[in-house]
Length: 437
Image (spheres, rainbow, N blue to C red):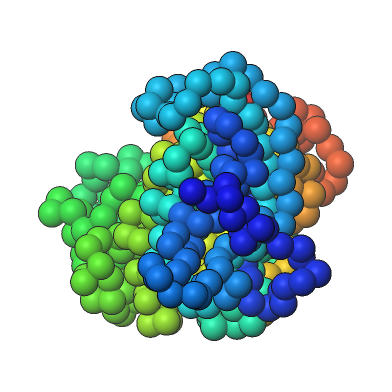
């Protein structure tokens, strides 16, 4: 049993070479001795059997994950969230709520995202005996490990340069209706949004290469409409085509959409897999933007799963130039601090890895722009309404104009209600969406 060998899975940070380890923060609840539970956690995610029978050897010094810090934050009579593993856990008694920081030697898996996840969020983490609840809260990777990844090829700064947008948020619009329209009216809606002031019109994350709206035809029409909008407005525009599909089609669909005029691409990162995103990033000639399907399934339950900041850091590492994430507001049901953690995961220094553009979204419109701006604390974000543009009473041109007018009001320090007195598009947005902020 591990408790007799606890010292083998504990270390002082000063005794380790930080270049050799990824640091992992977990919250967990356990039965019995928290130190034994933490040792089990290290063992199961690294060298679960550290020597051969009858051989005097010990693989833990080089290959074992090691507890650096362990804090018991309290006890309760039962796990805080019911799970099958909680009811089947061995042994009665109180449950301890703990926080632990673990140093895991990245030489165990190398700079490979599937192998990293298999170690730090796999069987050896979520099936530890005596730990019914656990959540991976954060990970910190040394520069030497990060240098094996290319990260975003364009990043936040490259997207700004592509669009010529500096000193303000980037305005995206999700073309609606998202499902059901054939390519021709879909393209016309995008064109109208661009004329009103959208920087980027995008496919919805659920609209892929559908028989009633095939990517080939849709991207050709939107590419042509984008060029017309640029000619009329005199400024660069972005069309983001969704190429989410089976992995063996991603490069083909990238080439098709880009040849047709898409100058950005959308990929549902977790459904296709982070390794697929990394492969696509190495091939991409335009910025890649990730969307968040599946992120709530992994992160939403308190105390269990993977925190959104971890999933966003890994998407940035895989090469996404911008990351759409669940944002502020009631619809997303996100704690404000967790949204800000996601924004920071895009923008904070990460060794040689470029910054990704954070795009917190969810039922936004002109009236929610100031709240997002104040919370983020800078202009380095994307603002991404759907119905707030394409459900506007004056159409997509009016919806997009209302966003730009809301930003002008923010810059001028004028309340949008006052600014709307002389700006009918903003007035119409307030009347239509004002009760849905």
